[in-house]
Amino acid sequence: MNVSADVARLAGLADVADVADVADVAARFGQLLHSAGLRVSPERSSRFAAALDLAFPDRTSELYWLARVTLVNDRHEVEMFDRVFAQVFGGLVDPADSRGDLNAAPPADSITRAPQPASERPAGQPHAASSPRPTIAGERPNPADDDEPDRETIIAAYSAEERLRGKDFGTITPDELVQLRVLMSRFVLAPPLRRSRRTARHARGRRLDVRATLARAHRFGGDPAEAVHRRHRHRPRRVVVLCDISGSMEAYARAYLQLLHCAVGGARAEAFVFATRLTRVTMALRVGHPEVALRQAGQAAPDWAGGTRIGAAVKDFNDHWGRRGLARGAVVVIVSDGWERDDPGLLGREIERLRLMSHKLIWVNPRRASTHYQPLVGGMAAALPYCDTFVSGHSIDALHEVVDAISGR
Image 1 (cartoon, rainbow, N blue to C red):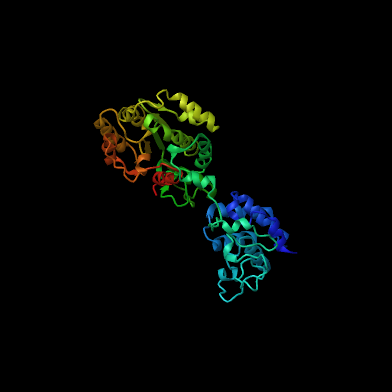
Image 2 (image 1 turned 90 degrees about the horizontal axis):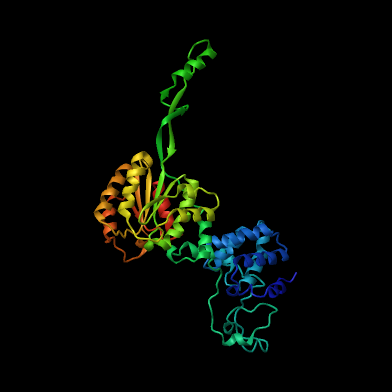
């Protein structure tokens, strides 16, 4: 069949800069390959779209291999795939060159051709360099394109998810906050393990289980021929998160409440919020539906967007929760910018006290993302000497540092 005619009917696919939907590009390109005789199913086109979304190729050679490994399943289909790819994406890459054959000729139906002398070109055919994009066989060139400056061909565009990953939590919109909830649900908090006092039967245990060994000896006429051993169990350490919801942290608190919801549901973490006083929101965040959980957590904290009393809040936690065992051997995460209204000395003493009870103390300060940031604020300067890890956590990409710090990596 005439592949060039199909390309001409795909208005806009040869100029990918006019196509913003990556899934639409993958689907239409897969449909064209299917029409050319290749066994391309919708499932393969979906894999191609997913590969474009993840890899984000910036060169045509990278796009070629992404399409080939996801859409071609037989070596006999490579030749036809090369012909279709060269026509659709403007002949910007020679597939033979990508395969390492430097002496191979370009595809027969390639769009790009060597410039012809003016005497040999048909009347009305423009020079190849005068067109902002290669001319498709069977397509009538647009005279208006002669005056249009050359523009860079965009192979793929950033998806909404990719843009949101690097965006600061303080600048996200309410609609992006809903998308942020989906991304945060993929985070898995894996705190380090601690040895429990309880034991369990194990073949390589060092402790002899006398009672189980004697009970099993009845099988052998009272002879303890088979010994039963036990060893200590290991369980994940508790994760405790204290999130600042004062006025200076309000923009970031909306995002971190969603992270608290994921942490409470996945890692069975304990969640507290504070501004002028400390409020435990663990039970409110255990509700399965995110919108209901976040609404209940906001209603449980009457001091939302109020003043900042970090030292008093940490002291309240140490007196009523940490001393009772909630912080002993736990990984404690404090999310705050460190702007303390009260005496910074109180915060320093309470942070030191909290560090002695906990296994690890992590301070997350979104202001740290700035290149000019220095921890000179009174509260931050007093607490920083007792912190094991100091990270920014201002975006989805920066949250990986927080997750790695919790897991001990």
